[in-house]
Image 1 (tube, rainbow, N blue to C red):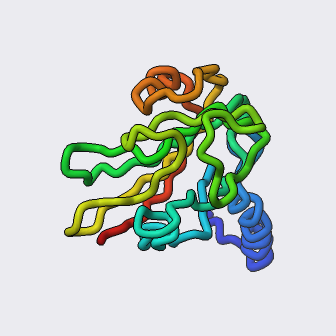
Image 2 (image 1 turned 30 degrees about the vertical axis):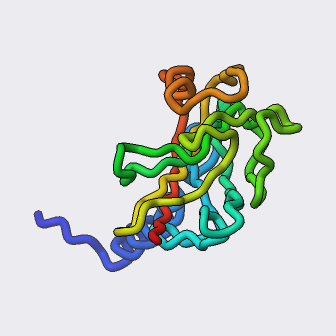
Length: 188
């Protein structure tokens, strides 16, 4: 005996399938209770777009405003590194900031270039041998890429102010919960 589905049976199966699609599309929250991926954003420039002069050595050289969404559960601090892998002598570091509080979700434009900030965040030494942000300043030629990399960490590093990117990376090793980055470009 051949079993042929009835027209009503097909309608019921189709109804049950269609009702389950929104549940499947919504997905399950990721670890940390958020369905969204950890994401760093800026209104200063578009991803892979050109960085305005305001944020470079050709202008006032202020840091761009940055923002990020909810980090993974267990985040104890954030660290941010900005570097240029296209520099003639190898990767050039433009900004090192760490021990950003886990409740923080943004950095304002023009962040002070001080060793320690009121919220306990600390800034390291960049490759200009200065504290804080120093923006793009490449030699004349092709565009360079500038990577703004934000790390969610399961520790507070408790490093003193003024450390280098290398010292920060050693302290962060094995403590990454998530990373997000934005790339901007600049050329003279």
